[in-house]
Structure formats: C-alpha cells, structure tokens
Image 1 (spheres, rainbow, N blue to C red):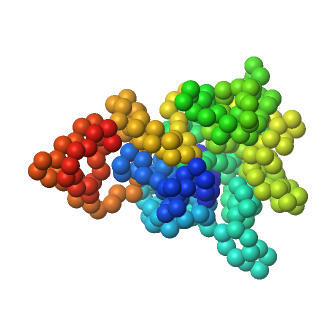
Image 2 (spheres, helix red, strand yellow; image 1 turned 30 degrees about the horizontal axis):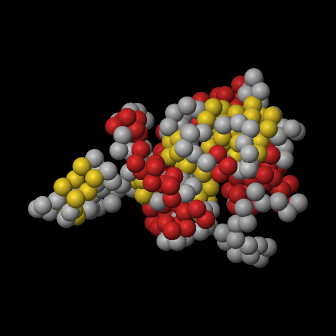
Image 3 (tube, rainbow, N blue to C red; image 1 turned 135 degrees about the vertical axis):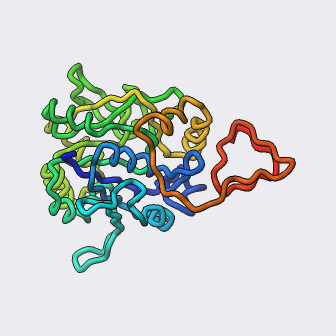
Length: 306
C-alpha cells in the first residue's frame, strides 16, 4: 500500500481514570485476550501498510511490553516495520507531547525520511475493522486534502464526547465541531484520517511555528474551509474506548455471537501478542454462563455475562 501508518496512543482520558491509572487506554484488554491497540494494528497490516509508528506517552510500560515484538502483526520485515516513539529530551526540545499535532511534530524526521506518498492516522483506542485501501482509493478519487473516516453515533453514546461533522451531498465536510455542547448532526469522527505525507508535514510545521498542538482543532477545524476535507462514512462496527461505560459496553458487545463472528471468524482477522499461558481452569463447583474466559484464568465461583 502507498501509505504509512501513525497510531496516536499517548493520551490520558479523565473518563478512564479508574482504569488508566495503571496502564494506557491503548493497552486496555478487550474480549479477554486482546488490547485495544490490536484493532488499529490489525487493520493496518491487513491493508498491507508495511510501516507503522505508534506514538506513546502516558503510562506506556504495559503498552510497550505488548509491542516489544512486531511479528504478531507481521511487521517483522526488512522493509518498513513497527516503530514505537515516546517523547525524547533533546538539545532543542524538553517537552512531553503537548497534543496530537505536537506528537507528530516531535517525530517529524521519521515522516520526512519516509517515501510513501500518503499517511493513515488512527487512534489506539478504537475497536473496529477497516480496509484502509478503500479509504485511500476514495481519498484519491475525491482529490481530497484530508479524508476523515466517520460513522453515525449510536443512541447510547454521548455525542458531545466526539468530533461532530456535517457533510454536503458530495461528502465534503462543511462543518466540524470538536465535542460540541449541542450537536447539529449525529455523524461523528472515528479519529481516523488519510492525508498526503508532504501536506501533513507542511501543516504540522505551521502548527508548531504558531504554537498550536492539537491535530483536530488546529488542522482539521482550522482548515476545513481552505482545504478539501471529505468524510468517508462506515456502517460496520466501531467503538471508542473513551470512558469506563464505553469500555464496559464494548466488552459486553463481544458476548454477542455476531460481533465475535465479525471480528474473529470473518476474514481478515484481528491479531494480538500471544502470551504463553495455560488454558483456563474451572475448579469443582464453578459455573460459567455467557462469558469470555481468557487463558490463564482460574474460576472458583459463579460467572455470568462477563
């Protein structure tokens, strides 16, 4: 594929504080044996993206351990590979990442030394499967400067937590509001973007010169009337791990046979690091109903809907 990938996995969600005190949101377990970052990594490798950078920062030890071998996602190769970048103190910089745009800026040399013409940017806290080849084809066909992957919000979701956008008949984005108090649309951004590499470098450098650090507010929203920014709408499963309630609801979704079939039986699959753990052990008197039990678990009591 003619694109490289960037996964933003360094943020800290205040809504996840009870769980993220010990690990990054991107390292949160999903469906027992997976981590939330596995879904972005799997979609990228399934789309034949051969070069991916993961930008980490907050509570990254568990995430770094999970990513210490790239072979699980087929990134162990001579050309390309999986790169993990944390904030680095240098002669010219002593800052942590001050925002998503600043995280990219602090690793701009990696972008400049790459040769792929396009960049796919994704967050590490989304649960989905996506063929980025189709998004790139759409991006090229529309002659877009930026393409934003979007979806319709579920009724149970608090839409004020997302970037809300409004498109015209040609799917060009006319309005984009980040976490509005009153939303005028139910179409939300998934935090996945496609952009030309050289244009991304130009925009990020301009943001840095002006002291702007957020990709959504300082790139997408700021340039929505100056650049050709389009929306690519998906109707397949997508969930964002942005709160404890979202995390619980997403894991409960995997108790549904159709969700498990979509992610784990239908091609392409979802991949993760395999831990060398024994099978789950069910001790005498234990009872398990409608639950996902991962390897290494020991069940002594009654478990249902878990």
